[in-house]
Image 1 (cartoon, rainbow, N blue to C red):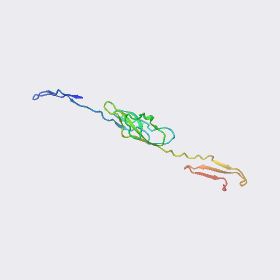
Image 2 (cartoon, rainbow, N blue to C red):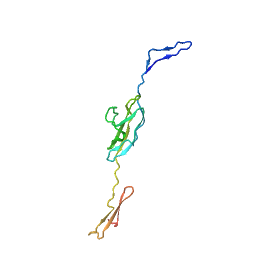
Image 3 (cartoon, rainbow, N blue to C red):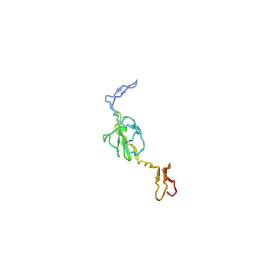
Image 4 (cartoon, rainbow, N blue to C red):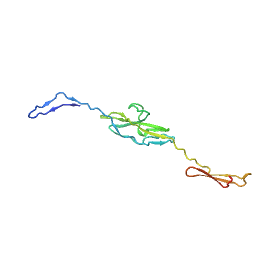
Length: 168
């Protein structure tokens, strides 16, 4: 910008106009991230690709240009930047997600310095299924009458067995 100065005189002073303007440069500044992209802090492993983000970051100055999973902060032109819906991972681990903000006339294009992390944690094993729920022993030389053992699973996961004959 060029600024010309004019001082308007009064009864005791002359009007002055400086012929050479003062040049002022206003440089763009970095945009700010008002809110990190939304998403869970952790997910259980399920064997499939899982979305690590559920919504965009909120920025002041510029717009979200994309996200990238990387161990260290990438440059604005490094790698592939994708929409939040395409930030996915499958395996157990900690994922560091960087946000790229595209500048405008007043803001620089940057990679936001504080990433979001999401953990995919080991899945809990499935509870055992008790099958069959009963077992009948046929009559034999040692036992002339068939006997039944009933197997049940108690609420906390413990398995018990009850026999129709205390000798089994």
